[in-house]
Image (cartoon, rainbow, N blue to C red):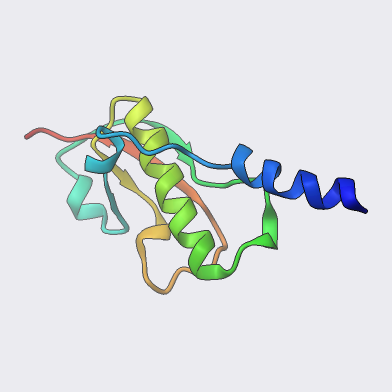
Length: 102
């Protein structure tokens, strides 16, 4: 049992996405009109693989951070995802990365 308790924080750290100055500028939206003038560059996922370990608010914050980091890694500026909605209940952490002018 002590080994399991020791491994739990390591699992949490492994699921973390480390924000950068580039990822901090990525916009996450659930409104398609925001990304209409943009170029789609790929699919991203904000999932951590930890399932129901985190509380819903913490899971949403973590998913948003991972979506931003993964979008920035693709060179994107925006991501369209249901995670952006305040009513998000954890059903999907997927998103579509876009590069928008400006």
